[in-house]
Amino acid sequence: MTSGQRDRVDFGRTLWIVRVRGRVDGRIDIRTVAVCAILMLVTAAIAVVAVGTGDYYLSPNEVLAAVFGDAPRITELIVMEWRLPRVVLAFGFGAALGVSGAIFQSLTRNPLGSPDIIGFATGAYTGALVVILTLGGGYYRTGAGALVGGLVTAAAVYLLAYKRGVQGFRLIIVGIGVSAILASINTWLVVKADLDAAIAAAVWGAGSLNGLGWAQVWPALVIAAVIAPFLAVLSRRLPMLEMGDDAARALGVRAEPSRLMLVFLGVALIALVTAAAGPISFIALAAPQLARRLTGTPGVAMVPAACMGALLLVVSDVVAQRMFAPTQLPVGVVTVCIGGGYFVWLLAREGRKQ
Image (cartoon, helix red, strand yellow):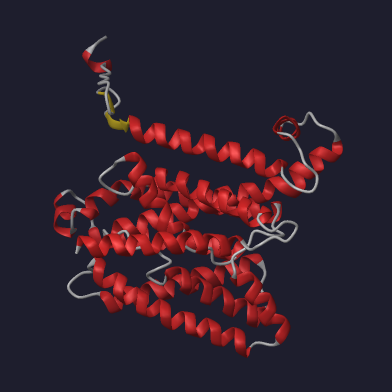
């Protein structure tokens, strides 16, 4: 092996790969890769069970046969048209929420720095709610309203928290206050709307995957494909930003523009979920920290957070569908119950640290 083609592998927790000729210096954490692989396998197994569960039961073999086009027509109809889109959306939306949570927790350097807590998700809900009550909704219009609402809220929180830069704790405190104000505005909007619109807004506002299909899957995939390259590039700057603006600048990273672009991408992910399913709380809060504890990494990483978010939302949706079957709960009700307990534990843990 020549020096220009040298690969070095150190076995242990971390696998190093160095390719001099290609000018690539990369590090792969073996534990992180293993954790992500296990999370994906568990999520896939639960997804297969979820697709087969219902009034018309299908075994895992029948589900897999339908996915690969080797099943009776009725089985393919049930799997491919009725049940699989919902599982795909739960997987994708959970991953999006996990990544969004990882972005904001990394930027604030605080496990409470979730879009649920600092008001960005509430702002996206406000924007979408205004569109639904005034223009009658629609996927793209609701998505645009959610994005605008989230961005306006992010700008307001950012400006109010700015004082010779933005400190994570200050951002969280300001965000909590803005979130409370927006929650009151959302309640007032629903109360003032006519009955039919108010009922529709209230049902949508619970956060639900009921009734969603391929019509929502394809636009979400396209938007996610547009966002993904920017995330791949900007995610490398997050560890540097966590060290502080001065350290980031010393390493050649423009701190403020990078932070603003990451905030925009995080809000865009929240808007993507909110437009289709309504506000789904606490996945963005819990997924990054649970993934961090499993991987043992010093900071919050996007890929493990995405895998954990996908698992949490798929599991939550199965619980929402089957706990009181045949009545289906909005998945947001389940995530609030699970996330509320996690939030109390996290607050207690952070309080003991202080």
